[in-house]
Length: 227
Image 1 (tube, helix red, strand yellow):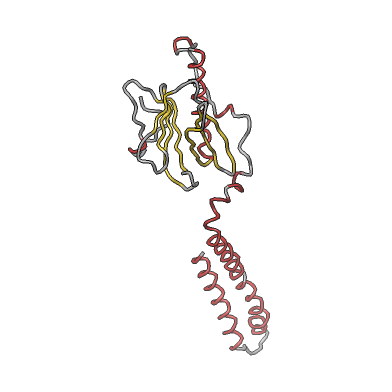
Image 2 (spheres, helix red, strand yellow):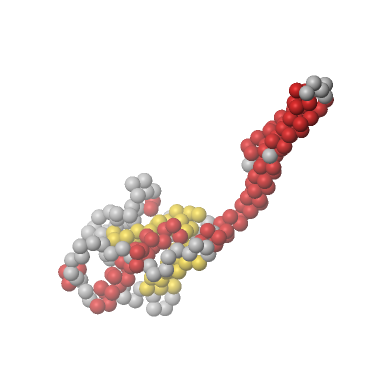
């Protein structure tokens, strides 16, 4: 049975290889590799196993569900992490951006429920039927931090010079766009108003002001386009 979390446009390489009769319970799209670079991977929990295709990996890994397995969730610096452990060591780790955290919490909750079934020897027939599916993401006691966007600065670090250039261009283009209104002041005070009073027009001043207006508008447009 396909997972309800699967997207219709999912890459065929990210479709978990289920065994006959195996049911997918939850899935998580992993979008970071071990070096925190964007890459596509997938984590799928079934009623029998935990399946994973790490970003950049060619094959799926599988761990049969057992009471000794433990799935841990952490987040730091705008990055979420699920790590799988047994009694002796960490077996695998998956990292993702925090937009996928609700799906990660759901998978974690279902994993823990399956684990408790194994520990206590509970089958589905022993459990009372539930009218609604548990919303594990809603059970999270801590809301997402308002500092998440600031912590995401590590992703912007490789593009810091482009960002600084864009910011500088924004400031300069804004300043250039403010020049024409100021040039209209001497155009009114020194050309148009004196002309209405019968004073001779200074052609050189007119051309200088018009050239300034045109040049400032052209510079503002060019800087805005470059930005």
